Length: 627
Image (cartoon, rainbow, N blue to C red):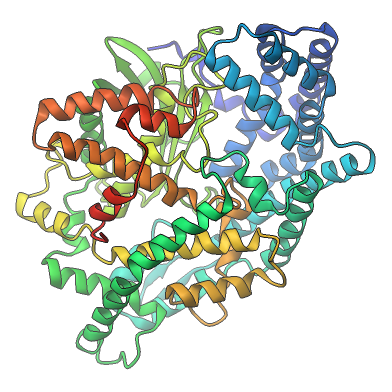
């Protein structure tokens, strides 16, 4: 294993230390960038590599600040972020908008002699500068920068508001305390027989963060203005400039295709729920939004003769984690080993674990795993980030991060996972695999760097297919496993329509035709796609994906990626899932394309290189029972 001196010393990453370091780092970065500008360089090392080296110390520290805000949120960290956001955003724009660097990049491109990967990196740098307003001057440039700084602050405030609202709610009944955090809310809604509790929780979660209403209006207004300053007709077109989807019309076409494929099936699924409501609970005269998850779980139990609680007993976290690593070894020939004891690098919380990834006897990557919920301290959901990328020039290997929000350990020191938790773990590890198993030697295109945002979910969604594969060794009785596999597509149409409603809302509120309130668009699309919500629902106020994350006018990317990930899994189906040698052979091909090539070429071209043809939705529709 690499010595722990090469990993962050998290005990020294404190609000006071970061606040003390940032002024110096900003000054040093400014001096280093100025030196690059004055050098007159027009070669790859003198421009791209030199610029990376100039800004790395600053942005590395800033990324660690943002990481700590997401996993150990505090007033002190919020203050540092608020104090320095204007300067850091301004510096980032100053670099992107540098005409000297822009001209140097164009000279480097014109000079030739670049490898295909270097050429793509330089072209993407030029595009990034253009989208950052390098061509703007005078008042237009000043306004663009003002908008960018304000949007950065609004995103932080939006996310903090959701964290605070989630932490602030608690409800106790009959000695049981209920919360609406990501670790507890979904299970309660499925298993709690008390309608009053379910209603109270759903209303609280659906009405969270009312303060974000005004932020949404301002965010959307500013995004539209920013896009127009750059010459785009709306923010949707601006967003798609860097994505796989060729145009906005193609996105709507995908949504419409899924709409048609799921409409009748979803109606049938809803009638099934209504059909068992009275039988399950005589008090239910009308199926309300807080009844649906509970009734769906009862229906699934009846149809497939198992319950989530029964299945959960076989998904102890340690067993699932080991099963995931066994599956990765079978598919891709890697070993994942936990690092413990004195050689374990520092972590930011006692629950955080550390692992090494070994291929052909050599450690090729490392990753942290932060598994448990910390209500009020950690953002909701699950994610993968990278602290370091592969770079042959600097001799660095990937260092990744996996964050989950699982229930804490019980009195016996165990955590039992719902099926959705198992899928989430496999999903996030899929992201990490693309980061860690890259073969690209340049940090700017290694791992997920330069992978288009609407293709970045391919590797993660692909891994979900293997959760119940016998080769994991997870000890689920065969009879129960067969039932779970049979139930794989239970309410698939309804779930697909929920995702499509999010995608359609996202595209519409970022379009030139959007007028009025985002909530009105949400209500219209929820009605069309059959989403059942409480009166006064303000779901958008906690939709951090598009208002505080990277998915603005890009949420459709989950489904766009899913088409390709389903098609990737189709290659294994074609090879024969029961044929170990064929699966290994196909896994090796997948490893050397989807996982290895990262952003060195477009995700579309990487897919074609693996599959031998362009993607289509047939495999996904078949796998989800929607063909």
